[in-house]
Image 1 (cartoon, rainbow, N blue to C red):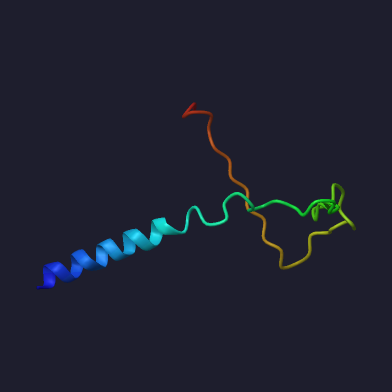
Image 2: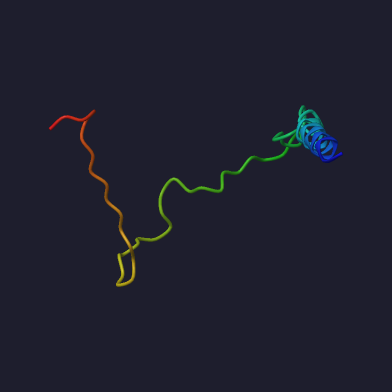
Length: 68
């Protein structure tokens, strides 16, 4: 009986995870006709940023494909 419970649970998870893929996929990420498209990321910073006392900087230095 326990085996059938896991089998039923597995099929339920499989069906639920694959059933939502095609719903409204043709209209996703489309703007309305005549809508003005605005990019929210500016090309230049709005103001200069200065590094302050509690900022953390991470720097990674790696070799080129294992060269010494």
